[in-house]
Image 1 (cartoon, rainbow, N blue to C red):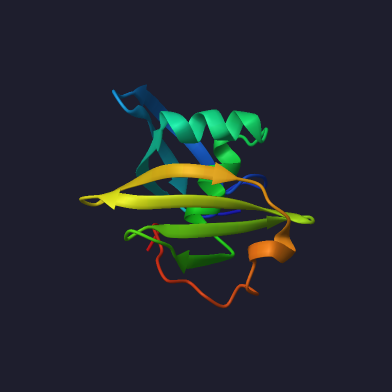
Image 2 (cartoon, helix red, strand yellow):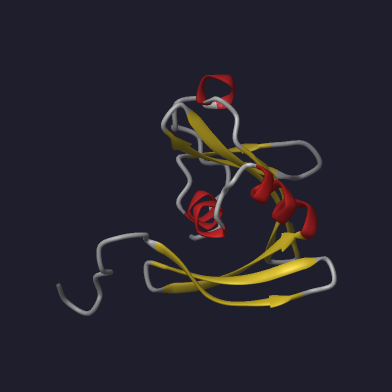
Length: 123
């Protein structure tokens, strides 16, 4: 393995976090790039309800299987996990991605096959 390759395991890691008024700002590292994403308090509560880790949601946002356009200038990132998918709804505040909510429905309800990527946080 050379220095530009990542070790085996999760391709997304949390390198820093700090509390904000509206939630928690996480700094993720993915493919050698660091990126901040604000998780609103509501999204953190929903992650806990669905027993999803912050790392899993970070991977959904940074390495999605597909991204759809939602309502109100929002995007919906999907990451398939078995018969379910992480469905992460986010928007931008300036250039900062902000996670609004997340849930874990059955894959056949929302997944469109993985060909659509209307947005990419990690460009």
